Image (cartoon, rainbow, N blue to C red; front, side, top):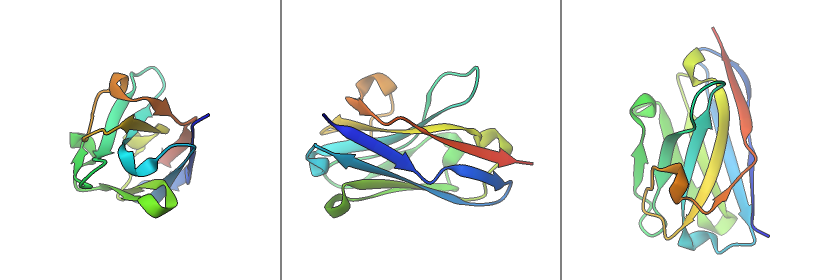
Length: 124
């Protein structure tokens, strides 16, 4: 079955950076729009960033604009989330998701497949 595997999470001090990776298997990655979501304890899952399947255009939640960058390398079936200037409020479990022919979808219900998540903790 389709698998999405995230990596790169961890503990970082405020102001630091992390790069998350999500590698997909058993799907035609180039035909999928990808998204990064996060969920903090007691909060709903929210979109962080999304990237289109066909032109690589991107969209960001307000909280990540100017600090986060989503990118993809189709030959590696991998999507990345570069996170800079991290803040304690960025602490959450981060998930990647795939949507067939997705065009920067921002609603979690639109996505077809999900990874298991990776914990990001930002200390003050």
